[in-house]
Image (cartoon, rainbow, N blue to C red):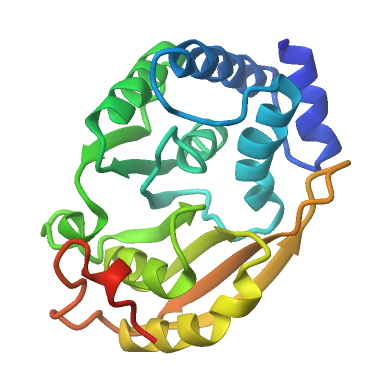
Amino acid sequence: MTENVIYERLQKNGIPCTDELAEKLLIYFRLLNEWNEKMDLTAVTDEDETLDRHFADSLCVLRTGLLPKEGSMIDVGTGAGFPGLPVALACPGLKVTLLDAQQKRLTFLDKVISETGLTNARTVHARAEDGARLPLLRESFDIAAARAVAPLNVLCEYLLPYVRTGGKMICWKGPALTDELEAGGKAATLLGGRISANIGYQVADRDWQHTLLVADKITKTPKTYPRKAGTPKSRPLG
């Protein structure tokens, strides 16, 4: 992988890219491959697919106008850092919090943050349900995001408690979204949100069916949500 390959691939996908961004994404890319040999970060090992499935897919949101130039975003269940860390690299005015329940993943992300010189990203160690009850995190973000984490009705309970009134929840979803919309819409309403957009997008030369599901935060989330850790998954709303 080279900086030029990354630059050209993002440009082909309509994603704004500078030489500096390509350089930092390459550092991230190489660290991901290096650390993936000793811990489970991604099942994708082909270089071209890694670039498309993780980096280009995460940054396709830049084509939509959904992200503010300045503000705050939390990536819940960030895993190897997608979509939050590529977004932080591409959007220096956006303060990004990367939340995950596994400290070893956050150790990897801290290494990427250090090596790329990022000043607008931080990591937080917590389960989604527990983090949303912390006063410093609850209803304090313009955007709460997640990619490939859970069904939509579960994601609503994970994400909407982090979003301030007037902010948005953005979920990167695959083909299963069609079957999740009804229950997801009901869950969003219970949590103070309302589904407002369903934006299909393509990664160039791939036949993947991907969608950005957006919900607006209309009112404060009731204090009873999120329920205790594990409950949203075992007894989903909607």
